[in-house]
Picture 1 (cartoon, rainbow, N blue to C red):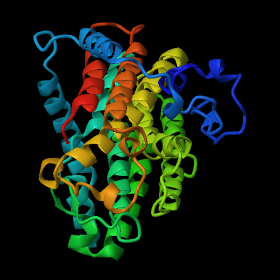
Picture 2: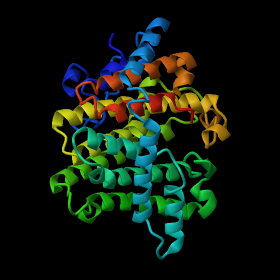
Picture 3: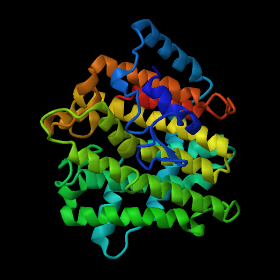
Picture 4: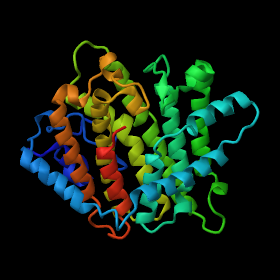
Length: 368
């Protein structure tokens, strides 16, 4: 039986034999695994320990050495470019309170994984960093909005985010809701505004429109919002939800925005349809990988180590991969997703692929 990770990263056409009863992510732009697929990860054939070691070795071999690529320096340089753009995009203005709340959450730290993925995807298809700064900024605005809303008392009711009090704890719940709404609106305005792009290196309008449509699908009732709704409906039931529902939640709530980050970068960079779809499959694997690792860290790290409240999934009776699969099998699944993600990059220029390889490896082995 084919593995879930293999199905997840396969081209759309290879899923023709699967049931058509599925979410709207099965559109050409969102060929996500249907909820009725016959290979949920709980029933996947597991690799023995020696095979898991081979996965690690393969992933390590695919990632160039630190001598060839300075990943830490790359992340710092790209994150700095994004931070400058975000700071300029949200100046203090009247009414000050809402802008202070927006800036508090948007500029209050974070790894900037999503915008860096966007910049890297643009460059891997031949685009330039400054062409991708607007979509990278938009993705981070939306990600921050999702965190602000996710932390609210009506959602996860969390008090700590990125090592500091959550927005609603500092500014109050009404302002936190409105600040998140404002960031969402600003994200699309920033992405669509021709003035956001360099005048001497413009992005063709057709690419910008396509990027807007891509991001919109990822965020709305076909993407992030869908995952959040099903997550809320599945919390506190007293019994764990099945893996099919858990995968639906995370493919929509977590993976969709990571996919948007990569795909919008590839679009504005002028990538071909084939390149965009390869990067889409890479991002989908990385997106689910991010959540599997997040579930592992939530149960094994402290709040101080994570910079956010640890153990909250257990406390709120949420279903996680370790809860359903066990800690060791969750780690094996993460390694398999890492391998499948890196395989999607084999057709790209080896000189340009290093950032995405290292980003996947970083997501798999991060400690917070």
